[in-house]
Structure formats: C-alpha cells, structure tokens
Length: 178
Image 1: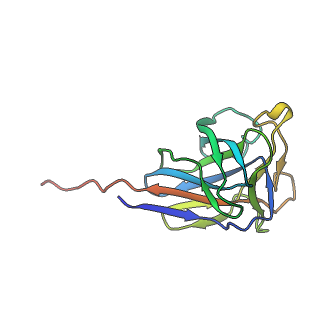
Image 2: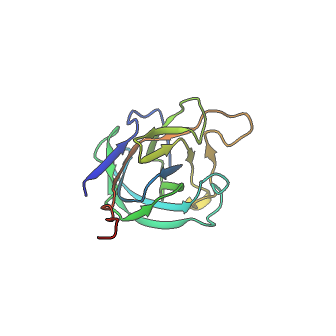
Image 3: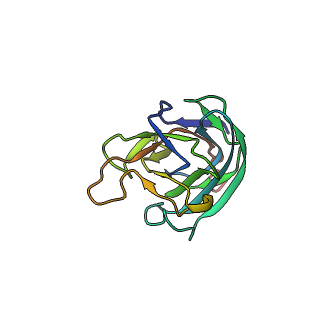
C-alpha cells in the first residue's frame, strides 16, 4: 500500500541531544522511516520505543527497546533527514526516544504552550504528541540526563518533535463467507 508521511513543524526554536514523545495509531500501521531535524554534520542516532507513554520512564531504560542505531548525515537544518528506514508496527500508544549518542544535534520547538502530552499533529490515522527534550547524562549515558520541557510541577511548555514519520497501512483483510 502507499506510504504516508506525517510531518511536524520543521522551524526550530531549540535543541538538545534527543527528544521523547508519544505517537498513537488508531489502526495497525508499519512505520517505515523517521525523519529528524538535525544540525549539519554526521551523527550517531539511536531510536528507542516502548509500549504506552514515555511519561514516567524518561529517566529509566526499563521497558525501552532499541529499534536501531546508525550514523546519519544531516540534509540541512529545518529539514526532516531520513534516519535510514525501519519496519516497526504499532496500533496503540507508543513512546519514542530519538537521540544522538553524543553532542546536541537534535532540533525541536519549544511549545506550543499547551503542555506535553497534547496533540502536536495528526491525520486521523497517526498522531504525534508534544514531548520533552532530553540531554545525555554523564559520559553520554542515555536516559540519565536532564529533561527539558514540562516534567515539573506547574510547567506547561513541552518540546515538540521536529521531523516526520513515514508509514504504510497493511492491506485490508477481506471479510465475509466467500
């Protein structure tokens, strides 16, 4: 079936090593690529996913699965650079963590001011929700660095994934008695 790409705003206002956010699909889909707004250069990028939300798991590797890790060369700032393709099926709320393994090349937007966990962009099949920026910890450790964008009491401004998600829907299964 045909590929569909859902793109968020590519005009950056902020950045960090990585970004955590949730996606949701109301029907089964297979994600075939993530695009990420990266600073110029070549970066080692890791993509992790987990069932359910990232919230409550932003500082722990528990439940996260590495989808892939590879070197990616940025196309240009404010462009969704393909992370090289994948095959990942979802049909429910899923947490996503996309991060560089060193440096701070991941770009995103601060806000909008309606807070993390709110809908960023959707098309009736796939939804991308506002999340957080994520720094690396000591020694470039994943999951242990600072969180940016709303995970403190009273904070209302999340961080918005700047990139794209490309997916396909499996063909419909015929129904009936034949």
